[in-house]
Structure formats: structure tokens, C-alpha cells
Image (tube, rainbow, N blue to C red):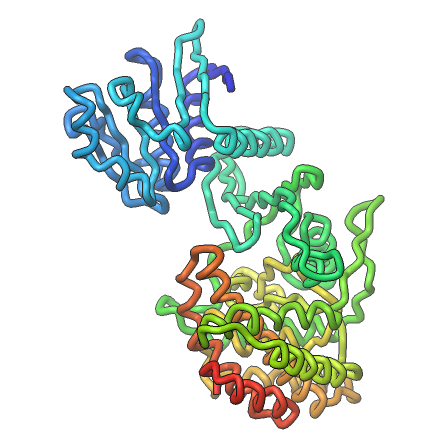
Length: 497
């Protein structure tokens, strides 16, 4: 890649763009004469990683290495004073790259010892009144950088070409998010949603995502978000979109959630979130929603195949992890027969739009709003038409935080009171039975997901949610309609009951 840098601002912007590109294990070799801009770029990179424009970034000329414990650890090295390449081993470059990024000035002395498969060489040269940056490295890193440049072009077309960009978060999918900080006006959110690679076919020629109706492209988010906003609920406004490239520029709803500083539920905010759900479930959502003037989106149904492929995670991941052996064919047949019967019992349950993951990570508290607008809703692209009790279960049995029994009871009662007020024919008994089945379905899925994230994806941190998931599951299994599954779990001897 060859990039023209008109001045210092462009050099700093390139440093910030690299901070959005690199991942643990990546290494940058900065090459260039004195005054070429290496220090300017390095300082901008580190400050962007730290999200601190005033961070002191001293030159590592005399210390050889300066380390920064940031969201990804960064190690800034200057090898100018290195007398022999063997000294690089003493510095522990391999250890630095295990979970961090290395930014190396004057790398020539160690050129043969740098990790070729994760090395990005960036050469800065004077060019007229500006500079030229030449980048060489593995295709996977250059592809990531190109994506960052594509986003810059998208932001430029939207009028935010000079805005600062900061990494916000990534989620369990291919989506990532940036905070966009314009020179004037409120902050914005950039949703980066490249089309994910097609997963393995597991059933009837379909992938897990296809069976479970996991949204793969932005039209789902646009259609659902506009529908929520149009009905007085608080979803982020969409200011610009490039559906083909998977880029959306969104309203920033803020960072305040529904948990206190200690990570405990704030009862008032959960109760208001229930009020939001009751309002949503009272609407009669059409199956097809507009995306724009020329495109529509068909909301998928939470059908039998989707429910069963989700609960398969318990028997495919949780059971062998807990028991040390896979389920027999007889066990599998009995397990899925039980679920077929439970799904049959949902036939006359109330169905409408369900958001799917309506729990603490996806709720933003908006003190500047009133009524239902206080509950900011994000991450709703996987919404489906299905039993509305599912959403209530996802909130009342929040997967990421423990909901005390007294608060759980209060949330359910608030929801039921509101639904009775909205509809005199609301069937409370049927709701309780549907709630139990849907909560059980969700917790069986989650138990498998936590193990899969640990074993397949190398993310053991999610296992901290397992004890809570088991307690929630035990609570809903007390419903008589769940007795066949309860008996199966006892016989399977996997530590749930």
C-alpha cells in the first residue's frame, strides 16, 4: 500500500487508523530517516489505543522499550542503541507479542528475527511538503487496514472525514463498533458489519446461523430499528448506511446501563425495561418491514428448527464437557422428542416481535428521555416473530447478572399487570407456561454456548456465567410441563439437577 500524507495531521490519522487495525500478536516495523514522522505516528497510535489525547508518550531511545497496559498491551521499542541482535531475546519480544502489539523503531538490526507472519513494515519518506507511507505485510493485516480505510471513505462521504475514531467494542459475531468523535456535535457510533464467512453446513444444507435465523447483513438492523423508533421506542437513529459494505453510522445512545457500579441490577431500570417490553408486545408487528424505498425485510419466525438447533448446544457441548462422554443416540432421540413435545405446547402461545437478547448488555439507560424512551435498545438485528414470553425470560433471567427472586417476582408482576391493562383477554396461565418453556430453551442454549466459547473460540471468561445459568434453569424446571425434561436431565447425570 502507498499512502500520501499531506502533513502531520495525516500522519497522526494513519497512526489512529493503525490502532483500529492491529490485533494481539501483530508487530509494526517503523522505517524512515530522522524527521520522517516515525515518532509522530507512534505517539498517535499509542494515544489512540489509550483513548487519551494527552497521554505522555516518551521516546524509548534510552529505555529501549516503553510498555503501555492498554485494551491491547502496546510495547514501543527503539532498537537504535541495540548493539547486538541477541539483546532482543533478553527484551522478551516473543512474550510481548503473546497478547500485545509491538511498535518498533529502527528495526533494521533485528530484521531477520522479527515475526514475518505478523510483521507490518511501514516506511515513511519525505515527499515534497508531505510524506509517503509505504506498507508491506501479510495479506490478512493489509485486508484489515483496507477495511479501516473503507470506513474512512464512508465517514468522509457522510461528512465526518476529519472526525476522530476510537475502538468501542466487538461482539461475538463479526460486528465491531467504533466511537466517532466529530469536532462539533454529539458523538456517533460506527457499526462495522462485514459479511461473515459461510459456516459449516450442519442440517438440511443449512448452517447454524441460517437455521437459528442469525442476521448476516444490515437490512435486518435497519428495518427493526426503524420500526422500534417509529413506535415510540428508543432505538438508535441511522444517519448513513452502505449496506453493500456493511457500514452503518448510528446515534450514540450513551454508556449508562441498568446496573450499578458494583454490577448489580438497578430495580427501577429493570422495571422500566419491563414496561418497554409490555408496550412492544402489545403492538401487532407485521411480518415484513421496509428497509428503504426499494427494499423490504421479512422477519423470520422462531420456528421448530431454530428452537431445536439452539437447544442442541446443550447436548453437543455442555453434556460431553460435564460428563466426559458424548450422548448416546438413544439419549439424543429422547432429548429431541421431549423438545418436540414442548414446542407443540407453544402452538397457542401469544406471538409477536421478540428482540431475542433483551438483557443488560443491550439496554442503555437514557436519563434525558421520558417514558419508554428511557430504555435504549441495541443489538436487535436477530429479532424474530415468536412467543413474546421469550423476551421477558431473557430480562427476568438476565444471563449476565443475577436477578434476585424478589426482583424477578416484581418484574413478572409488573409485566402481567400491564398486559392485563392492555388486553382483557391476555391469558396469564398460558403466559407462565410459555415463560417456563422459553426460559428453559434459552438456558439450555446458553449452557452450551458458554462451553463452546471456551473450547472452540478460546474465550473461557464466559464460563463465569455458567453457575447463574444453572440456577435459572433449575428454577424454571419446577414447572410441571417441564417434568419430562427434568427427568431426562437427572438420568443424563450432567450436574444440573
